[in-house]
Length: 199
Image: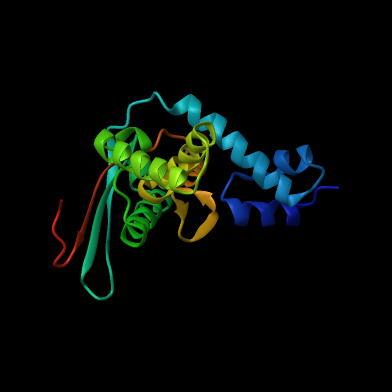
């Protein structure tokens, strides 16, 4: 039997709506872990439906590290001014700024990764695999695996979230889309570290 306490517990953990939490628990026979996965998948489906909608509003999140030597600005875009001014949206922008401060991504998504940088990494990984004595067909598979791992290091959307590494930044964004009901996109970001030269 699904009770109000279970629904509230799931809502507190996920930030999803009460009805969605109730449906998730009903669909998973009251298993909270499975219900969280169910909600995440539902959020993903909602996010995909909303992905084409225009994002002309938003908020610039900022974070300056306590030592005053690292600062980040990140542009988070949404559809309406109402959502842009919400605490949840601005909190997400702040979390993203902290993520960029801590994890120092190169770009937002794998598609934005400069081709020459990717090719350079690919050659290094291929060389490493050959040095390890792997045959060519196995070496290629190893390279692909290492490229995926590389994306998690340098692409913001692929990175594990610093506050909860069981989810990626992309998961975090999809959860926000599910809760706020709008298309949300990360625009540009700038990370400045004192004395660090831009390449």
